[in-house]
Image (cartoon, rainbow, N blue to C red; front, side):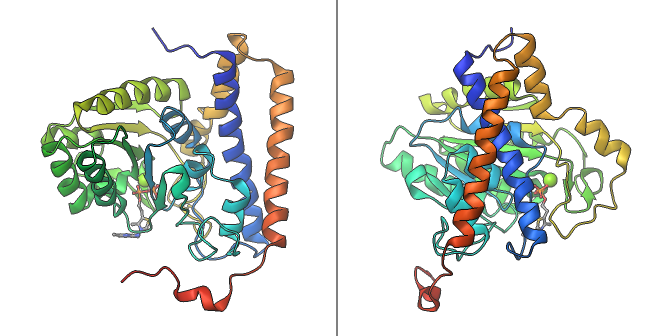
Length: 322
Ligand SMILES: Cc1ncc(C[n+]2csc(CCOP(=O)(O)OP(=O)(O)O)c2C)c(N)n1
Ligand SMILES: [Mg+2]
């Protein structure tokens, strides 16, 4: 029996996914204008994973993400103005303009960072979970990583410890089939069912359709519940796809149009609209209102970021820990 949403939850789910999509399309434009510089990894196509999982957390739970972190930050309701300002390197950015796209951070939202080292965030998540355990807090840590991270040694070290110490971590493996230009057939010995790696460490793991936000919500809710009630870590492998290149610098020649179009047919936002309309959860008028509101949020974010000041040169060495 699939999960059912009430109207308010359905509208919120749609709005967050649409916000991520439009915000990131705008990021691509601002990158082309030269106002966002450096690396820019977009999450377009993967929105259902961030929204379905993060909207199922409590406000004081922790989140640790990777460099493809804008979607997670927006789903966690970090201020879109502060995110855009961070992308443009402004002092009003969520990390003071010194982190950029890959290092969004907001402790007040339990958003403990995007990290650029593939899989480097996984031991950090386990460290946070150790602190929760030590302090006997009622929190969980949600840790996002890609298929590429499964091949890193510290993924295995971290899962081993998390399981041994029954730590409250919900691992979210975003399997978008590629690590940069390499398909998982060329990088992983099995090429599929990556979630089975968790078996080795006695961690319950599930594989889900990451393009179906309802499936994501359903599995996220039960997995979070299990971990929160002392059941130890869990792992969810969400099968998904990025509709765009690895980063803005990637022309994507390693994928063919047919494959991309097949995945675009499963667009998580379109699928959710079709479902919601067919179930009378909301109507075209609701969609029009939300779309207009989201466009305004994105416009405001760009204006805020453009008008913000660059960080002071003196701030360069502030908050650096060696
Ligand atoms: C330890 C390490 N090795 C290599 C890189 C270079 N690198 C950056 S992103 C990336 C691909 C990672 O792919 P995946 O984990 O599947 O995440 P996705 O980009 O698909 O979301 C690589 C190899 C890095 N940042 N860190
Ligand atoms: Mg990947």
